[in-house]
Image 1 (cartoon, rainbow, N blue to C red):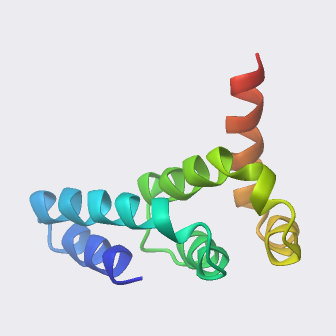
Image 2: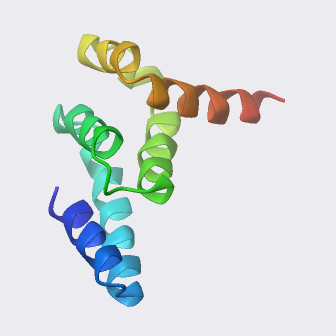
Length: 100
């Protein structure tokens, strides 16, 4: 979870290049992280902390969408969807957009 923190600090200090770098590193890392239990914690952190904007949220939603069948088999992920309403809405938006 260091990349989201760097992203938030770069945003605060108006360091756009560092912010972009942190986002790209985060996106790369969660492509691998989704398989671990830490992915649920990552989603929770991104959705419950005020310092992360929609770009960070969109990154975790895209990875969740790509791996939704395997993620949905996990109770922790199902509990997260129930717990974090904004994540559930964002996930449904991207899932239904791909259907229509």
